[in-house]
Length: 101
Image (cartoon, rainbow, N blue to C red; front, top):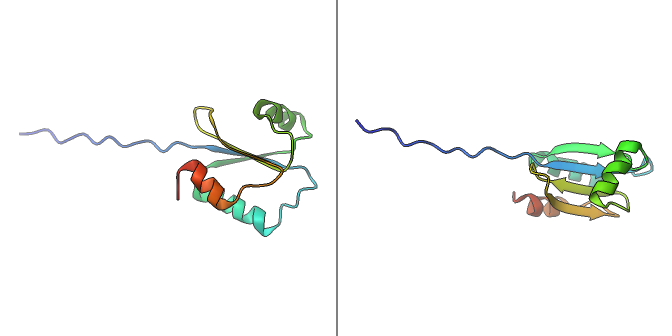
């Protein structure tokens, strides 16, 4: 008999959505709720940091973030796929960056 063809299933890669916001950032707005929904829809792991804290400040330096709020999307292999500072991205911008529509 013949062997069944092997199925090459691609593994879904997990991107990190890193949000930098100060305590003064309004996080209960419609804009932020939509942003968080887009992160979930696009299968990203959400991380939030206060840029005034040690870990947040270190990551800001790593990614070159100098204005808040900010968001950096990083692929599994460490490549920055999306970068916004001074404002949060729209859900459409997130989808375009991640390749999901």
